[in-house]
Length: 588
Ligand SMILES: [Zn+2]
Image (cartoon, rainbow, N blue to C red; front, side):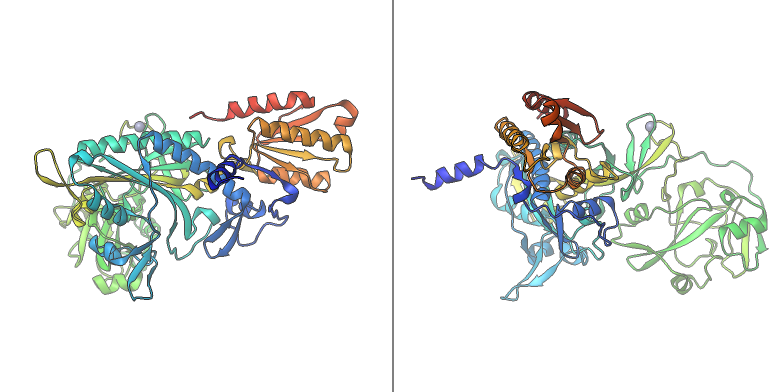
């Protein structure tokens, strides 16, 4: 009789991914679901990997979960290798903890807040800085207890207003979040670098094409961060990548090198009638100038307060740069009515001379001479305007969005723009959380000091979606070997043929015995629909046992990615499969 330990043990041993298609829940769809806008969402639904429960909330079906587990395994191995320790924190968090950092109010409606039966305010964790810092201040007393790096792999909830794109931007998602605690900034930098390297290994081992980029720190705060982006045409973020050096940045943060100032002599200020000319193009046509000789005055609301920003006529303001400069939570463009209420000037004729609201100037404009800009009066513009002589700004800063025509801020070479999907984000947090929550330790000099923190996230379920966005064709998904739910799909095309079935079954057993993860398609279906499903599921290797076995004694081995096929005797198959798997796996 087995004791409990024995049965647990045999269970874990048998948790190797193997399936018989006829007994599995793999509800593939022939039609493309109408609600799916991006390819990963369409294919995950069509291949029966996920099913929607409610907006942005999905069940992971067996194959979908198998792919998620592959990501988790790689993440776990690399986190453990980097010296981090796994724990698991609660999903339901008390509001009082979030009040200590001010984030209960600041976080916005993405934080799902509710009351329990005792009327205690709570929230569903979108992230765990407060919970982990609370743990650290209770359990870590001395510099001898540091450093620590603690991580978990857990379901998070963010109440997105418009969840879409399936696993790309759900409300509920699986994430790895890690938090480091150190005695000082130097040691925190070491921890950060160690995570940076661990992330490089994680995404390499996933078999994905990715870049680490300088990033905005967003609402989480902090002073330094990198995003890890999977490159894909359908990415939500735009990356700026240097053609020559290692420079790569999110376009939101891409720094622009200050250009040389125009040294032309100042010309006399002139007021010009521009009847009905409100848009840049119309003013330029009318005055026979280029958009680069004109300056736009744009009004934004930063946490509700109006602020004017000057940028060259052919440039765009980068709202994230503006938000960071102002330290605002939210920045949005003001509409015509709001502009008029704030300045008393109709949109299109606004300018800096005697403007009534806070005025910020992009550094490029600060170097311009004798430009054209609105006169703060309907139907008029000013010519030969100069900063310093005609107006004084509150601040000059890098506020515009970089373009592919700008030089690399590091080396001056050309830039390229690429689309990317954010799958990881690491932050050097500093002492913001530990100060706010009094997470202090006693240092070797006897002083009480705040712990220096870092936090490190990976979107585990999002990686599965990003892998599909990067790897697919018209017929379905094409999983990189390390993330594939299983490595091999074995098609039995002669269910009622004794010889074919016996060969398929013995190959299945043989491959299982050699540790290969395998799906045996033992359904009584036409070959055409088995081939279609095999392509859709994106399993890297397909073995077909059919008529060629009876005729010529061979089976077919096909690679999903490039369609390479080879004919082998059943005896040759397993050695060849093991070779191909080994070649496609990036080892630990
Ligand atoms: Zn460069």
